Length: 327
Figure 1: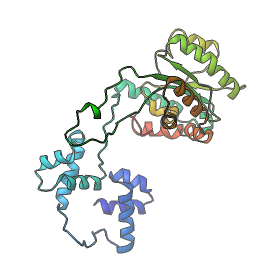
Figure 2: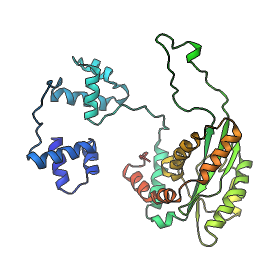
Figure 3: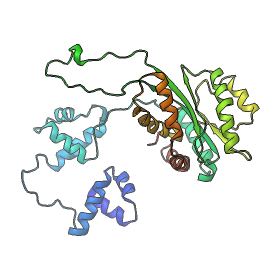
Figure 4: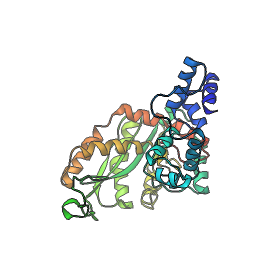
């Protein structure tokens, strides 16, 4: 039925992406069955050569259903055990892949409550009529931490049975060297940035606003109305920062909490982090220099695309009733 539906929906004018989303299948699957129908005028499986398939259609459906009902407890081994299947875990893995259910590391994420959803929807509805040109008059801002050394999983070549040999292990650095950047940008170009050590507080943030935001907006918007975006970090809303913003005539967007997906600068940080890692900095001074250099090397074209993505982001938030979107 999914195969037939993919053909019908495409002929009704839906895009491949829309069809895949409605049927909860992958885009390659939609393309495959539409191409198959064009060639054979049916959606039956082609005759198979080689070893027969180890599972029938009913089993394939059950595998997908179990994984969708309990996505957190659905590794191939767990599904095999729950359904008492006489096939290998690798076969179950293939069936899950065919159903568009791929094994991925579970992300840690704040759970949005009703108040969070309400504020996200209010923001989306409040600005949904803004055009890309309107968002060009917004300065987006945020902070990002950088640490020395390798990040993520570390690999080692070791003989069997030596997993806990000190030669092949490492200890966690409880106090890593930390460099932080506060940065901002608009659709025109990259703004000024402040690189500092330690934690952000109200006094430091006020200094950042005076020394970095002010010259940035004076350069970007010497005349006319503009807007400032910042998240809800306590340093941003403290009694030192708020008066400065008010006294300098800065119009701050009513940005909802827990909404990095609505701040385009969040998409800048992974790009910057990968570029900084290539410098292989060995101390804080080298790390600071690398962060500064790569910040200044960011592409203005990519920044414009990020700013112009805001109408689409807001539309998706409305469509998802306030819930997180893929950005």
